[in-house]
Amino acid sequence: MHLHLRDGEQMQAVLPDTVKRFARAIVMPNLQSPVITTELALAYSSRISSALTANIGMKFEPLMTLYLTDNTKCSEIKKAKASGIIHGVKFYPAGTTTNSDTGVTDIAKCFPVLEAMEQENIALLVHGEINDPKIDIFDKEKYFIDRVLVTIAQHFPNLRIVFEHITTKEAVDFVKESSENIGATITAHHLLLNRNAMLQGGIHPHYYCLPVLKREIHRLALIEAAVSGDQKFFLGTDSAPHSKSTKESDCGCAGIYSSHAAIELYAEIFEQADALEKLEGFASFFGADFYGLPRNRESITLTKESWNVPMEFEFAGETLVPLRAGRSMIWKILD
Ligand code: DOR
Ligand code: ZN
Figure (cartoon, rainbow, N blue to C red):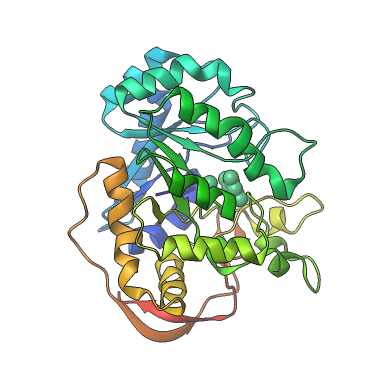
């Protein structure tokens, strides 16, 4: 329920990994030229469909999103709803992450649009980090809750909100205590790793993502939420491919690629927490329910069989270093 598919040849390279494991995905709109209108979303959706046709036999439904800006019009929300393919509008506080420069500078400017979304029943998807450069990077999610999210939730009690890729105990508590209209996605990497993985024994750029990995107490709170069976928490990989050269750089990009092994990694986490029976709800039911989509009826099969993740994948003339590169996996998906 949260995926970066990119565009063009990069999309062609990564799409098969997702389609092998998921029948649909909420597709993020932060392309280099962001998807700010329904027209652009329709065009992006048909580029995804063409890429699927090119890889014969791949069945997959892209659930499109719009990128919110200070200038988004209420009429655009009506158009989005009428399109039937747009399931959410993504709020990136300007400057917080990849291609967020045209994001929202002050959410108060968007209140009329949020009201239109509330009326049209289109979900608001939030990148939950405050865009105040004075705030410590490890505290940006907490400040976003206190200064932004609480206000939105108070003003728009009927707006459905997905707090994306939550990373802290504060976020878990906020979602638990909120109304049924607020849910959250949790990534595999935030369940698997804490900030030591990124910074201990050298700097590991392939573990750099946003929101940045946090302390162990936060990772444990995320695991508890994910395996709890609470339907407010559901799967969203935030798989975000960047080429090896742009990650291994003096100003490396944020994003972790996990689509090649996503469901297998979640299975590992749930098994370690002795909660494999809770995986299906988290991975397949709760997100669909939140978005008002029918639950999928087809299934995939995972077996306990070890395999090694390749060191790199081909990525539009460059390479891509996946999560767990060169190391072994416990669960395998049956072809
Ligand atoms: O790590 C991230 N990568 N976080 C985001 O919010 C954006 C994403 C990307 O598009 O690369
Ligand atoms: Zn994302």
